[in-house]
Structure formats: structure tokens, C-alpha cells
Image (cartoon, rainbow, N blue to C red):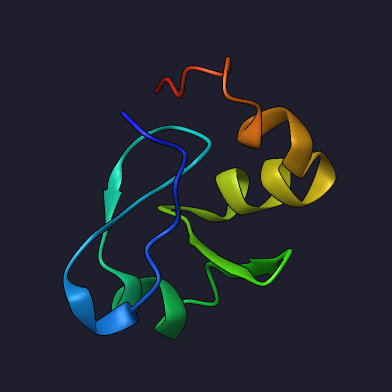
Length: 69
């Protein structure tokens, strides 16, 4: 899996950088499960993942981090 964000909400799916789940960006946007960080968009499956990411984005963007559910 990759920690890369989905750059376009209309493109289908994004990967939640915290847990690795596939997320529909349009659903995440509608549920306020979106964060813009360092000019990149990140989408989340749930509020907990979004809050964890907001608390320490560097941890989840570290290339050695392995998302897990």
C-alpha cells in the first residue's frame, strides 16, 4: 500500500493514510473526512483516522509507516 493521497476527488478511490482502507473521496468530502496538508489532499474512512492524522501527519507520511486496520 502507499501513503500517497488521491489528487482528484472524482478519480474513484483514495487510500486512508492511517489505516490503509480504500475511501471514496466524494464521500469523505461530504462527511468532512478530508485534510489538506502540505498542498496535498488526504481522505479518511472515519473521524478517528482523520484526528490521528491531524495530530501527527509526519508519522503517517513516513515511508516506513505501514497502515493497518
